[in-house]
Amino acid sequence: MTARPEITLEEVPAPQRLAPYAHALGGTVLRHGDEVATGRLILLHDPAGHEAWDGTMRFVTYVTAELEAELAADPLLPGVGWSWLTDALDGHHAAYTAIGGTVTQTLSTRFGDLAGPPAAADLEIRASWTPTDDDIQAHVHAWCALLASTAGLPPPGVTALRA
Image 1 (cartoon, rainbow, N blue to C red):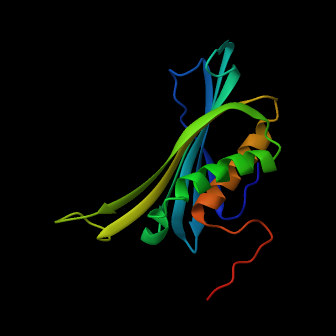
Image 2 (cartoon, rainbow, N blue to C red):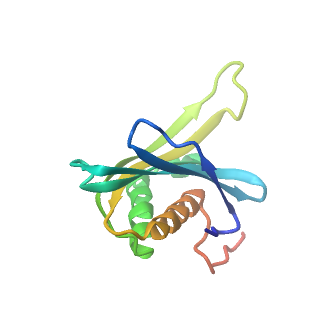
């Protein structure tokens, strides 16, 4: 699978106890050589199915990005972050059901000997959903779009204007 040039994908170890079969991808978004977002996408498969999954397969994801403090303080950010996921799934025709998750925004202030900038702001999206068809590639493409949105990249074909 080919992702956007800013996104690097690699196979990573999948959890072994959640389902009989699992596969995982890690993703990193780089902008001007700096890591601006990371994530993990796990595909679980249990031929016996799970009632909570409403199927035999389940995607689980975790995406995180550092933000500007002003953006992280926006009370509308969690809803916007969730829409990045659902819009990406819908836009890539990745059929799903039983979707759920959380969007967390954090503002952290460092004190004392902790290295790094004095203040940091982060966004985390944790979600899971059940694909309703076998088009796994559509879900992976949607997840890459979620990574790109979380990193603040413009949509493909759109050039960001610089001030």
